Image: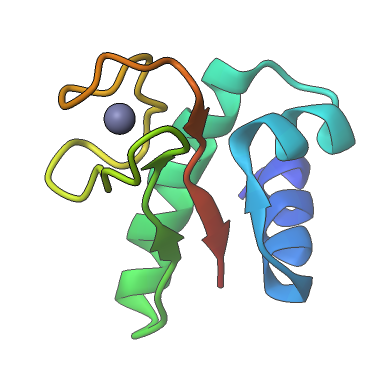
Amino acid sequence: MSTTRQEIMALLSEGEYGAKDISKIIRISEKEVYTHLEHINRSLKSRKMMLKITPAVCLTCGFTFEARNRFSSPGRCPKCKGEHIQDPKYVI
Ligand SMILES: [Zn+2]
């Protein structure tokens, strides 16, 4: 397991963070954060633990992005086409 991944896991066991927050704190790109989150999710499952995900929400109409791939951040709301999306947040 890489040090970066351990840092993310330590961060997420302390509180809830979005991918943008994680990328700023750990100093890696948002894309890398998603890759790490997928691996973290898998390794947690094998230890009977869970990465809890608060789904992305449209700040304009309140639409919740539950069905889509929750490891990536949606760009646009399918309901109102708004772009003010609250990114998904992760916690262990
Ligand atoms: Zn919307």
